[in-house]
Length: 214
Length: 214
Image (cartoon, rainbow over all chains, first blue to last red; front, side):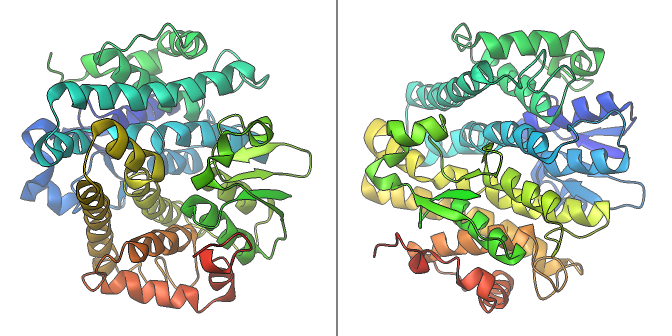
């Protein structure tokens, strides 16, 4: 397998955690998003959508979309499982992951911020307010949901890490990078601490990647 | 089962199609998003996140996030299947669905448009340009992807409808509602025609719902 990766992409970060949790090795190629390497012919030949991450599996098939890649890893390498067994519990974990992957992350990713600045013509301060607003709204809903639900354990669902934790940790890393105050989210940060105590999460952190920049 | 629904929500529309394809009946409750009924105590008691759709299953568990709900329906009512059998094919279908659910839809939904108008302070024309831009970028990538791939058939994946079609049809309905020119997307509109020829898709259309308004 070969993972097309970028240290600061939170979608790629999710896949790095999943590979580590499964104990899987993947060759790595680094696509520098801030230098627009995802729009160069070499990468477009692999993934015409120009998005990171992409995972090339052993028969050459190119998989995209972090959650679809992780479901693939789950189906092809079931142990350790990243989803619980019961359908309603699986739905809970997937919905927590989608709360982040659909309702928080896409609204503040790099291309949206660039459009705000360069096409809408916002100020840097308006762009930062946008970023913080959408993360805050999303994390607040997630904190409420996790804090009130007995199914929440040491991790987002019970006491083993799942797809939900895999999405939570990179989202909180983004929030920390823009110095968002996380004190209103004690459940989220407690779960984050439990996650990053595991080497599978810690080794996937952006700062520990070969292409990391300060 | 009881579906909390709103005729114009494209996420709810996805769940309506999935229920119809599976031949499942659900009691319906209508939450008027434009009147902010999703923020009223009665609905917040069901779903504290105040999002539509929510599906209450027979033991009273409340499921949220359209894609998580549809995966639940797939696991609990496997026939007819909305995902192919092979893991790589399942990953392709899920990634097409996520191309829409993560990379197109969240950027132009109602709450984002409201924030643009009322907090960023854009004009109506800038808000409309935003809407059209993100749908166009997303549909262009999807058209390229589907047009070049031999796995595309009568539907997004082969000759039976899948989760990918369930996401495509509501997204194109949104595009039509804002009168976006769809002629650059012949593969998408061809697949849409194949879908809406099926009663499961046609009966789920916004205009055919009991709460529909013009």
